[in-house]
Picture 1: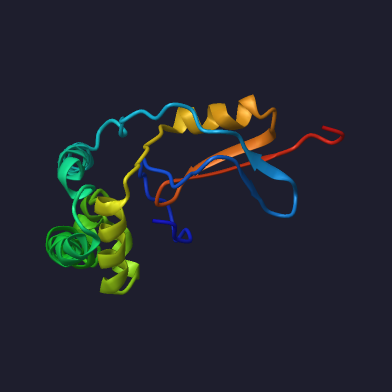
Picture 2 (picture 1 turned 90 degrees about the horizontal axis):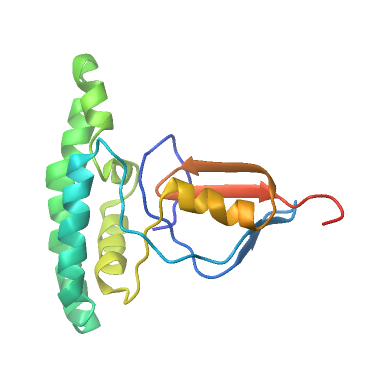
Length: 167
């Protein structure tokens, strides 16, 4: 679910495999620890969705790709019906904008429907899924002895740090 950041979105998953080196300034992210399955406090809808996804993945990760693909479309329709379209409507009403911002999956309001379909396919077919807390991601960078550590929510965690001079 890697997307560029268009504003703040407090999600709790990260797409991360092994060691990542990114950018021109020697930014490094250390090796991954054991995952947790936490989501932020005060987000009961996201917590419930995570529980449903986790339960469904017990079955969907074992299905043939073609069947997962067939399931991705109705999952995306549900996401749009319950979250994306209500978000689009609520954000236009001044008294309801704060409610709109609390809806999960609102990031799909900025993308074509097919992006949501593809992400649902990824979500339900990938055999391994790890979720990390903000604290865990910050710890990776600290253990990597990086400086100027920044971790921001943006459709997952976007983490950067600078390697010390001479390090």
